[in-house]
Image 1 (cartoon, rainbow, N blue to C red):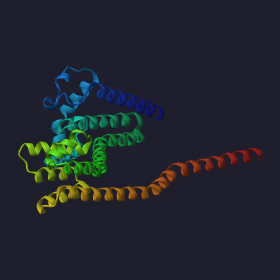
Image 2 (image 1 turned 90 degrees about the vertical axis):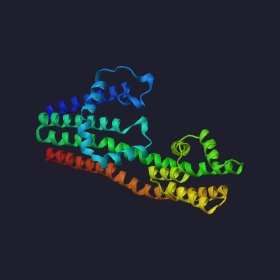
Image 3 (image 1 turned 30 degrees about the horizontal axis):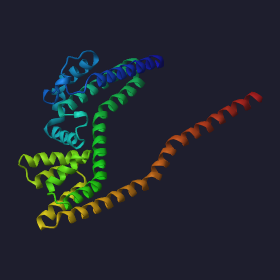
Image 4 (image 1 turned 180 degrees about the vertical axis):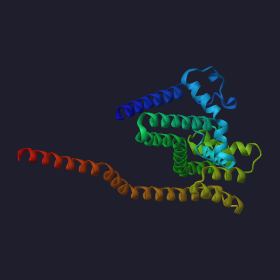
Length: 296
C-alpha cells in the first residue's frame, strides 16, 4: 500500500508541476477575454495550456453559481483591491479557480484509489490546499498592495505639496507627480484622474480610492483632503499636515510589527528546533537501550 501511495504521490506531483508550468509559460490567461487581449497575443495555443483553459471555461457556469451574485461582487472588489495582478479579471479568476479545484478533486480520487484510507486523507489535504490556493493568493496580493500604498503615501504627499506650492492646481499637480512616479498609489490616483476627466467629482473619485483600498491611512488622507477643500484651508498646508500624520501612522505600524518579531521567532524555533531536539534525544535513548541490552 505504501509503495502504491508513493507512486501515486509522485505521479500527481509530476502532473501538477507539468500542467502548471506549461500553463504559465504558454498563456497569460487573457486570451479568452477579447476586451483585454492585445493583438500580439491572439494566436492559437495547444497542449496542456489549452486543455487547462478549456477545463476552466467548461466549469464557468458551476463556479459562478457556487459564488453567487454577492460572492461575485465581493470577488470583484478583492481583485480590484489587489490591483488586477497580471491583468487578472473576474472571468479569468473563475476559470483558473475552477480548473485548479477540478485538479484537486482528481488528486483526491487518485490518492483514494491508490492509498486507501491514508491516501484518501492525504488526497483530501491536497485537494483542500489547491482549492484554497487562489483565494489565499489574491488576499495576499491585496494586503501587499495596500501596504505598499500606505508606505508610498507620505513621500508622495511631500512631493505633491511642493508641486502645489510651485503654483500648479491640485489636479495638474497630481498629474505631474504621477507622470514621474510609479507604484500602486500612482495607479489608483491615475484611475481617479481618469474618472474626473469623464465628469466625476473630486469627492467621488477619491472616495472610490478609499473604497477600493480599504486602508485606514488612505481613508484618513481622503477625509482630510475633502475637509480641507470644504473649509477652504490652503492646499499646500493641508498636504503637509496629511503627510506628517501618514508618516507617523506608518512608523507606528512598523513599530508594532517589529514588536511581534520576537514572538514569531520563538514560534518558529518551537516548531522546528524543539521537535528535532526531541527526536535526537529519543533516538539516543533508544540506541543506548539497544547497546545496553546487547552488552548484558
